[in-house]
Amino acid sequence: MSLRSEALDYIKNNYDFYQGILQDFIKIPSISTDPNRKPNMLEAANFIKEILNEFGIQDVQILETKGHPVVFAEKKSASKDALTVLIYGHYDVQPSDPIELWDTDPFTPTIRNDRLFGRGASDMKGQIIASLTAYHAINSIGPIPVNIKFIIEGEEEIGSPNLAEFLENNKELLKCDVILNPDAGMISPEYPTIVYGLRGLTYFELNINGPDHDLHSGMFGGIIHNPAIVLSELITKMHDENWKVTLPGFYDDVIPLSDEEREKLSRLPISDEDLKRQTGAPALFGEKGYSSIERLGARPTLEINGMLSGFTGEGSKTIIPSSAMAKISMRTVPNQDPDKIYQQLKNFIELNVPQTVKWDLKQFAGGWASISDISHPGVIALKKALETEWGIEPLFKREGGSIPVVAAMQRILGKDSVLTGFGLPEDKIHSPNESLHLPTWKKGILSLIHFFFNYAGME
Image (cartoon, rainbow, N blue to C red; front, top):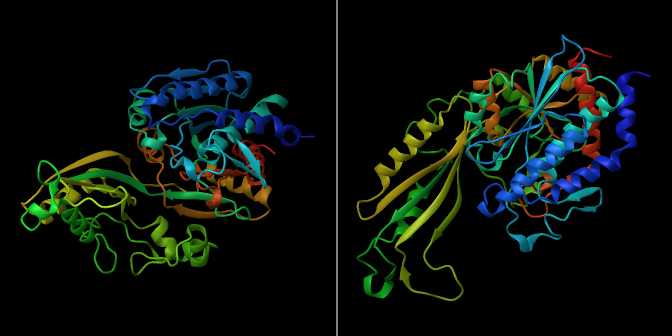
């Protein structure tokens, strides 16, 4: 029996053990955006260190950043010529709000109908444990076929604001041949997926300020420009009748989709009906001239993520609010510069905000979009691995979400990422009742076993 076959059997005989580790990991409320959860963030980092120690890696480092720490570990192959795989992950999770919409406690892992429920189960504690499990199964049987390095950060859910500096300062430590990033996902349990493109993200907070305090709408209505109305009108102007973004120069750097890529994207088995079912929306909507699939991963967007102004409690209160605020995000595509986007939004505001109010624009952490080379040996190794386990050729897609580290690693470390993951659209990541489909997760672990051997050129 080959080492590969033995490792696959080891996984199958120890699923409950690895699933138990994942459940313990989910119990830690590692919410990076909440200052009160800083002790839990350190708890999560130490949890990973302890598991790595238990899995045969003794030299595990918890490296400080200006924010939450990064966990680094390395396991060398016995072969001097072995290739090196750098595995990325993040141990932080989204807040659990609104808590009242959860069916069970978000940090009490619960299994129902082949799904493991809990915050971070899919995004991405389940993906971290899948990677650790695949490594550990091979290491428990014999020598690993590749050198493996782990970099697991704690700030992805807040835009990885300190990761670029960490990468710059640790280039030698992170030197590798390919990066495996399982923070993407699959189209469905039946279709294994490799993501080759990610949109970038720029995020802003816009404040419109009028009077220095809320005013009685009867005494002052008609002479004071209402900041809530100013903000609403401004937001309305951000798109034209074809739902194109109207910021000056917004599309100047966008690379047009080729006919070949549009044809490939059209073959993805995702229909408009599928998207309506996943979202619960009565109808789809978006930029004219593009299909839903193209809008999702290959076209830039501008969205309003939240608005706040005036009285929002029960009953009535007749005021002119002193201020209004909107959270604005833009998903960008390759070649769009986040700093240029900031200037474009600033220019738009200057052109459209009246002199009757003041405004302030804050820019938060974001990241560039990325495109990976699908002919890279690592991608080919993963393609073969997924095909072996699922029995069909995997699909290639561009993802609408953003993983800032991918572009940062591409730029700083000079290496492409192989993007996969075993989460599904139904997992409700970032929402109440997040869950992980366990049968898909288990097949994913087995496919990672194949990936390591394929990339090493071993049968």
